[in-house]
Length: 197
Image (cartoon, rainbow, N blue to C red; front, top):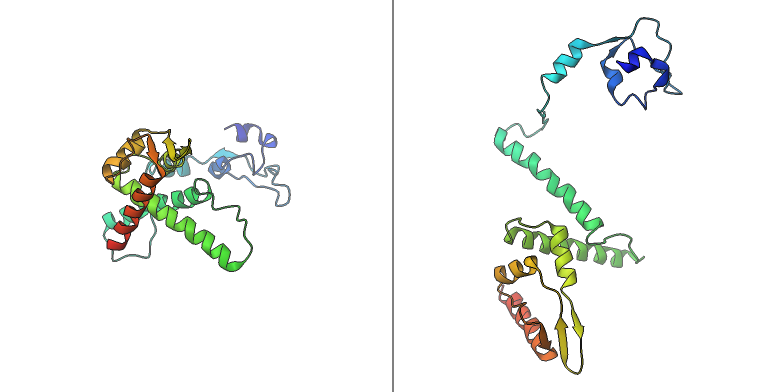
């Protein structure tokens, strides 16, 4: 209504789509300013009511016409996971910037990021989507150890996410101080588990 009352205050950029509901509106192609109307500007109530009837509904256009409605909706709802995966790869896994220049090194960098994303998704799935990938990766990053003296390391971080990972994957994070020998045995046992798969 304010555009109709004072069109000179607005342009195509500042009308934020509201101009689509105004009859007889025209814009300068170069500047985007509203041209002095030849006809009286008025609110397009018919268009407004048509679109109000669809508020809260989403239309999905697809070429998969043989699929059921429910399957198409499930696929559409899953698209946000793909978008989230790109965000996670860029931010949490720090895929960029890439500090390598050879093509094989670039490929290896992104393969490593992709494998890390898959592992993070598996952990997220095994934890029943209780935590976001960002929170899982943050907890795992904090769960490092500090070399104390001689042969001992201190694991100085533990939270509820690590506790759930511990119980889900039969790991033991409860011991805060471990010897290097104990750590090597744990790593060796994971290699044995990988080989048995």
